[in-house]
Image (cartoon, rainbow, N blue to C red):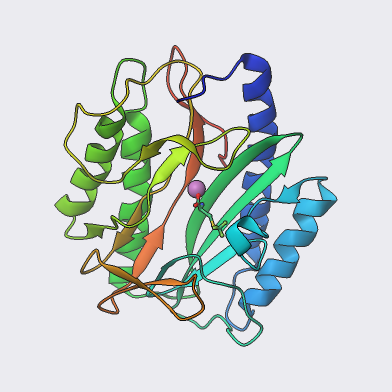
Length: 249
Ligand code: MF3
Ligand code: CO
């Protein structure tokens, strides 16, 4: 069942999302060669808690950290570690969710470290553009897969591939609610979009094959062929007018 939110509930989700956006923005300024992914984790967790929110991922199905930090061929769910230090030319995806006053917000972005290759820069740009292409379709009367198809179309038109193994989702009192929002599919399928639906749309885009595998830590998803991967995510609400991005930094 897709839960339609009241204005009061949307206001609470928006408050959680403002924290997500602010912390992601601050993480972006921290990202530089030499910083470890554990330092990013500590920085983000301290900020989330200072803002009286709870890191949503910590303990979620046993996930051991507050945020996910995924480098280069890592697609999502990279576990921060003091042993992993950012290097010039890396691309780093940071995924962050918070719980505030009973409601969740969720967002992610991929950040270049120093000077990155042309392919890396294009991958980051196309992934963010694909997220916005999906958001554009998040209007009353469309169906869920109109979002999916727009994302897939933009990604493939640029020679990249969309990951199938993970999808976007409804969000509210739970981190993951119905509907699932895949980043691929034919348009015109799935539930109809209605005012007051809150969705976390999150394309994961690979330079080469869309296939992923999970490392022995049980979490880190990497590209099966070693290609690069990027990830952008916004929490949005469907309104009478344009979709409203709640995690805008
Ligand atoms: N944004 C991701 C999602 O919606 C993050 C979940 S990570 C986990 O699934 F660590 F909490 F599992
Ligand atoms: Co999410």
